Length: 118
Image (cartoon, rainbow, N blue to C red; front, side):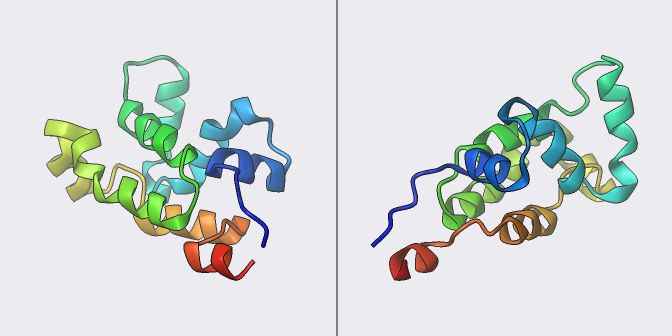
């Protein structure tokens, strides 16, 4: 039985050929709703902490070792956004849980059942 020991960031970077220090930048664009990607420009210009909550989420997601860990992080999304959650959620100016799962599945990130059968 092969034990999976990489976290999501390591796994994604190895599969996609992305340098580990670029994990957040590459994955952030894929996980934001398309109409929210304009925030990347302002964030790159250094205009405040516009995407701080998203970076905090990605930091935790990067440490996930299986899909259930990703689910756990995503269940706490309102906590990451704090008082701004209701507005960001209403306007969908945030990362998308569905997109997070899609990126993880597309990269081949294992679930607990995949690991057990390996």
